[in-house]
Image 1 (cartoon, helix red, strand yellow):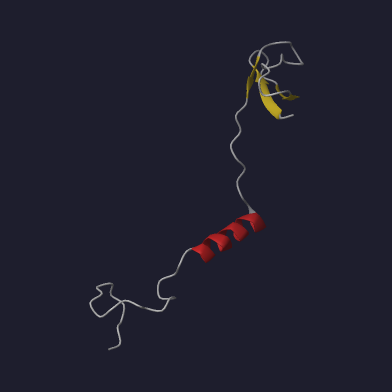
Image 2 (tube, helix red, strand yellow):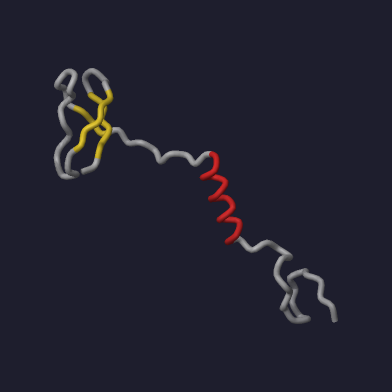
Amino acid sequence: MPTYDYRCRDCHRQFEARHPINEKSPACPACGGSAEKVILAAPAMHGHMARGRELAMRSLDPKPGTHPHTHGPGCQCGAHHST
């Protein structure tokens, strides 16, 4: 069952509640007021996780000049052609 974060509209207290997705928002446990879901942003990637992602993305991105040039003599890409 998912856990949701809520903020009370009356006392502004923040709390968590576990319930099925189709169930309505619970009342605030502190004052009984109505609550609204708090929308949280995705966590930022820091440290080793970010470095691992960066390395993985680099491995997918071909670097200029690291592949053998197979273009014909009429190619206008600017790479040096030995003829």
